Length: 114
Ligand SMILES: [Cu+2]
Image 1: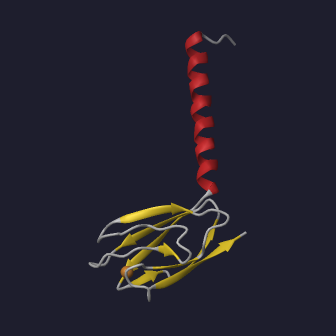
Image 2 (image 1 turned 120 degrees about the vertical axis):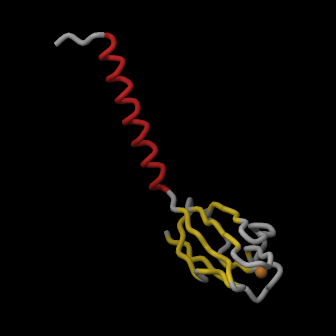
Image 3 (image 1 turned 135 degrees about the vertical axis):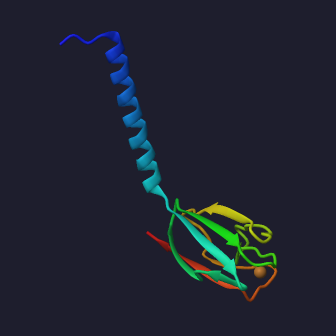
């Protein structure tokens, strides 16, 4: 079988695209993005299983501003107004208990899975 340069170029391109797609899939499987809604002065869900490398997005659905802030202050979404969100990546030493700086009675926790 004689392959023309054009065929080889096409084949190379197809292989490259297939390879890139598989790399993308592998990367996507490494971390999950979780969403925590803040509504009616509560974190929903109040408890969440996460792994290092996952990301958590907090989105404020209340009229009042809120934060998601680690109990030890090691991470903080900052002030989130209605409709605003903030995504933070979970690290191996991630602080798991958190609260809202404006409403300290609002509390939630993460569980770090191995
Ligand atoms: Cu709050």
